[in-house]
Image 1 (cartoon, rainbow, N blue to C red):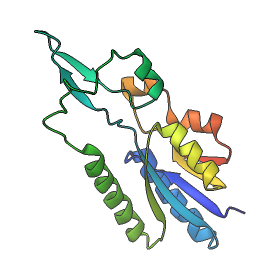
Image 2: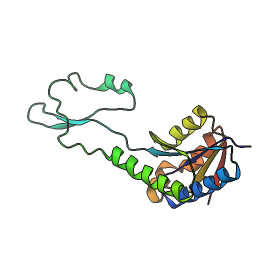
Image 3: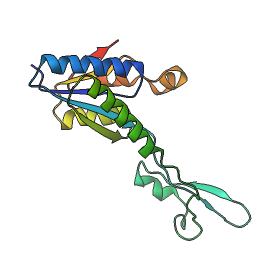
Image 4: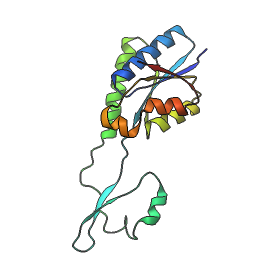
Length: 172
């Protein structure tokens, strides 16, 4: 039936229920392999300050696409660019927290799984992972983000249902 099962985890109640359901499925399907994935959507941007004359203007490098470079004034990134003085690597802390949380839940159920940290847009990154890893079934929670963020960004679950190449089990 299902050989490769993945569960998308974001720490929400919905994703915890999805992880529990995925564990149940793997126990019922002993030949199935389970992957638990979490996505850090925080983009890391380089921010510095230029001092053109008396005015100080922030300079933010676009890490999405190098095509933006053609619109930047010459000299940005050369002299006059100073890296930020304080750099807080939230990505590492987020990954440690998520990995620990997932591993504790897997240990509680005595279940083995691959736990993977991914970076990027959640819906696009998860869809790419599904295709790359030939995932048969993706288990997701009904909701993760809420409030205005969900309203403006759109539901990751809805995007995955629409764009995914695999079967999807939405857990409520």
